Each structure stands twice: as C-alpha cells, then as structure tokens.
Length: 373
Image (cartoon, rainbow, N blue to C red; front, side, top):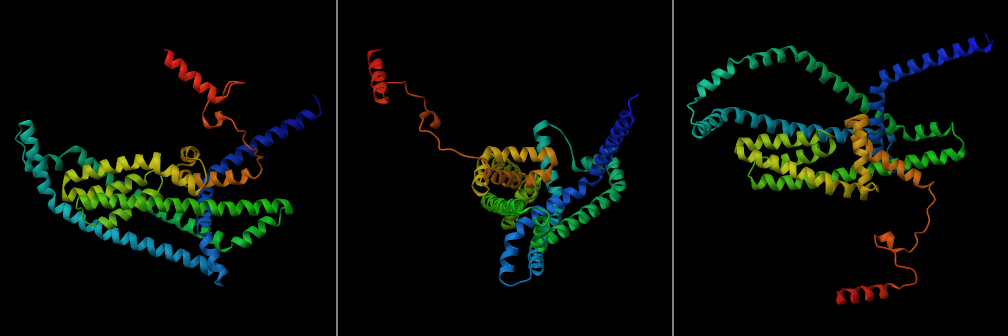
C-alpha cells in the first residue's frame, strides 16, 4: 500500500466531517443569519436620515435612537387606531349577526323552496362534530400560539437591536472592514456600501409611493360605498399591502371586506373584486414601472428577482430581492465595458435594407407593385 494513501484517506474523512459539520452549523444558524440580513437592509434604509442628523451635530447613536423612536411611535399609534376601530366593528357585527343570518335563511328558503329556521341552524351548528373538534383543537393550540407570538416578538427585538448597531456604528463598521483590505479593495467596498444605501432608499421610496397610490384608490372605493372609517382603512391597505411581502395583500384586503360586510354583505364582494383587480394592475403595470425608475432596474428583472427571492428565502427574499439585485447590478456595471451602438434599423425593431438600394427606392417599388396588383 502506498505511503500517501492513509494520509489521503484521513484527509478525505476530515473534509467529509468538516462539510457535514458546516452544513449542520449553517442549518442551525440560518435563522440568525436571516435576521442579520433583514437588520442590515433596515439599517441601510434609515442610513440617509441618520447621516443627515449626524451632519447637523447630533451624535450618531442618539440620531439612530430618535429615528427608531419615531418609527415605533407611528407603528404603535397606527395599531391602536385600527385596533379600536376593529373592536367596535366586531361588536357591531356580532350584534347584527342574527339579522344577517335571517336574511340568508330567507334567501335560501325562497330560492330552494326549503323551510329552514334560525333556531334549527343554530342548534345544528352548536351540536356539530366539527365545531366540537375545532374548539378542542383551539384549546390545545393556545400554548403553541403563545409560543409563536413570543418567538416572533423576540425575533423582532433581535432585528431591531442588530439594525440599531449597524446604523449607529456604521462608520466604525466600515472602518473595521476596510482595515483588513488593501486600498484598492477599500474603494470598492465603500462604493458598494454607498450604492446599497442609495438603492435601498430608492426601493423604500417606491414602496411608499405605491402605498400612497393604493391608499388613494381604495379610499375612493370605500367612500363611494359609504364604508365607515374609510381614511384609516385606506392607510391600512396601502401600508400593509406594500411592506408585508407575500401575504400583505390578503391581510390588507381582509379588514376592509370585514367592515364593508357590516354595512352590506354585497359591499364585501365589491371590495374583494376591487382588491383582486387592483392587485393585478399593480403587479403587472404599476410596480415594474416604479421600481425600474427609482431602483433603476428593468421591470422584468424586478419581477424575476422577486420571484427568485421568494423561492430562495420566502417572504424575506421577496422583501430584499429588488434592492439587493439593484445594488449588485449597479456595482457590476462599473466593471462592464460598454460600446456605442451602431446606427442600424434592426436595433429599433426594423429590418435591414437591401445592399445597394436606398430605402426610398424600396418604398416606391413596393407602392408600384401594389398598384399593379
């Protein structure tokens, strides 16, 4: 047996073990890495505001604290406003539920020639097996729901802490990163950081603009239907649909439908139809154009990056896909050599003229051939 074979086998086994150890560690830390990635992009989003306040003499840590306090106050106020509104509407809906149930039963009796009554329907629902199983499952799942809520709050706190450190210690972080790189690489890193701040800010601006347009459109619909709390509902739809990826649209549309149902059940169907139609308009017409202008990427690339980000990282990938791709595209664009485009009709979608024959001659020949035909 060759003398190098045992060493090669030991080295192969060591590499195999290191690979599995690294895979296990990555799977264990993927949640933490995802939170750090979200915190990093959140820090990039508030970087312009923090830098402006720091330029005016405010300490960077205190400026970051003020930005987070402003965001926190606005979020809590918005949640409390909608919570009080929703609680009142739920109470009203519960009080009016017997009337809605009577109207539905009357419609069923008239349409299908039945003789149902509200008492029979209520008794059948209360004594049904599926309702009892649902109550039992809900009782046993209270602990799971509490654990999920506490875990979500802990994750949110972790993201805010990391983003606070990234934003407050941004200059120190950049200095520490550049200290281990040669001067040429330091310039590239600082340029990439600046591009990331610009693109993330542009993405947040585009999302805010789409939230404004969505809020105005839904406000007009709710005002036409005379749904109560139309301004608050419009703000809810605009913010939730734009800043909560994947499920934000459904969460945003559910609340206006619920409030519209308390006014007239048919109004809920109108709201549902409008939400679906507007979502298609936003996905295929509004969002690609706005993101291509503010983030400076092609609409097809913006749409594809969201799909790819969702496939790779779920809701988090959908949220950060566009600014990440825009940053990468702008950074790599500095290293791609570009040339002047030749004057050729095919560039504009036309066809190349025949050699030796002017375009005017071709037009006259085509006209004569049609006249002769």
